[in-house]
Image (cartoon, rainbow, N blue to C red):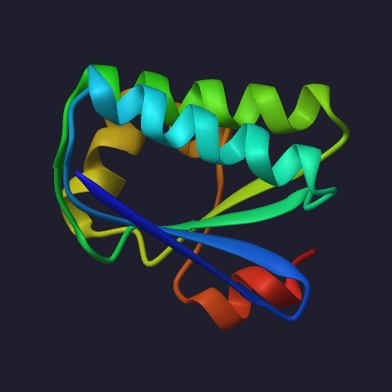
Length: 111
């Protein structure tokens, strides 16, 4: 997984690309979220449009990110959830846990 980030309208946007499967991916995302928290950026969107595939460990990484932000009075939202990942969220009932939006603009407006 490659991870880039940017900011739009005061919201930090993480843009993972490739597969989210754990291992170094977990550390990469975890470290970036902690960096955002240190910088006072507590509104975060993960843009999943570039994610090809995610396994259960990848879902765990997202849950961990959500928990980390909530514990620091922040919010995490998902944007551009692909059909494969939406299916995974539905099967695992995590669709009720994550606030998912069809676009980054929609996610930004929801804060």
